[in-house]
Length: 353
Image 1 (cartoon, one colour):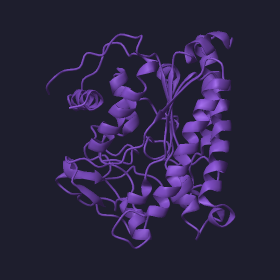
Image 2 (spheres, one colour):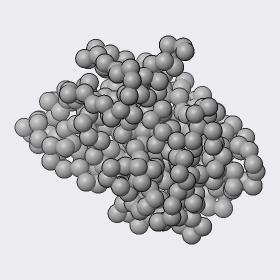
Image 3 (cartoon, rainbow, N blue to C red):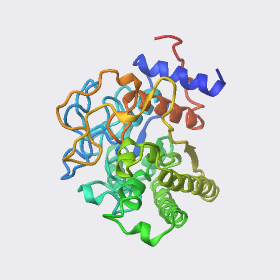
Image 4 (cartoon, rainbow, N blue to C red):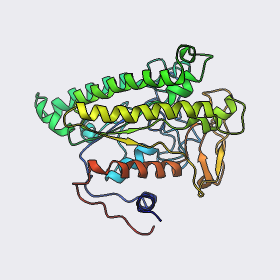
């Protein structure tokens, strides 16, 4: 087994054994993203993009929390591997000293562009997630800064930030011409360029607010999601969608190198999106839960029994991964971000469950 694969496998085992560290490797972790990372921010929004009902959460100790999964999501896994005893709280309910260890701002259906996902109803775009972070910083000034920003900036420089955006700018914007005009305004390459330009400005704003260690995930290959195959009436991955995503990710990778050279003290790490294919997960083209025909496209029908052999499935619903896929993706992201915590206490991984 190759060294990288072996490392990820050990992290996978560590996560499955619900192992935690006594002291986190970093003091705080801030999360920006969409439904792959959302852990409850959409629960009280007027939107079809929510998952606070069964069978979502069937394998999570707290039940249906607003995670678009049967259990933990990628952000939960990263937080666990960083050594946090509990998941990072969603902005919607974070309060008091909870925010010292970080906040999860992610929102289902959110995108880089403000209009992405609007046909589903309420969602918190990346611009508004960043605005929420500014509010958090003001609260930190009162908590640890004694009215001064300087101690807060010193605190934030030690934090890890992950940003996972772009999925809805494709599946719930560019490739949904019934609701959005972008595909008639831009070629896929032009759209990728426009997206990356806006994304770069947003990441620069996070830098202005104190972020220095940023893990940026590429957009996922959503052309292989069952919902997209249904939308395009095909039995295989939608090449047009995945091709557009490839262009976006390539431009994003280049942009991050450029940003790092311009922003003093900033470190950007690009996190490869999951392909979701592995011999352990042999059901790759259908969801585990029964998909609703009346609420948000591709989401689970409420209160229906899902598949039993969830360990074999890539997709929980018709867009989102099962917990087991998130464990692998979270472990990969954690390993990729090792430059951010390598100087901290070394993580000792168990060799067996």
